[in-house]
Image (cartoon, rainbow, N blue to C red):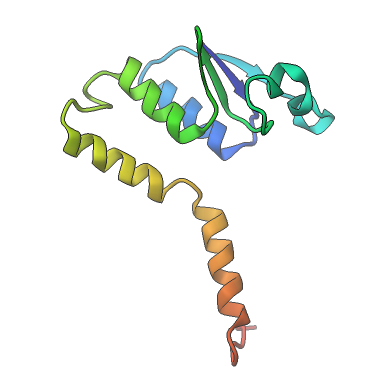
Length: 123
């Protein structure tokens, strides 16, 4: 199973962290985004958006950290990481949805606050 990875990416880190916690072995393939490797056919054929992470597991290709986490938990993590009952699965998906991109959401929220009339930032 291969993970196309960018070491500095938080989304890639989530996948690497979960794999380590769940003892799932990954073949990590670093993608040199600084030199445009994410725009080359080897990556674009797997993810037309040229974004990482990308997980290849045999014929299965996943290209979103949240979906990769669900896949790894369900396929390899066992019931400790992906419960058999819908309530437990829904709670995991709920958490993943709220934690998907906390920094960009915070940045947008802060920008909106600063645009309010009378907003005076503290020195």
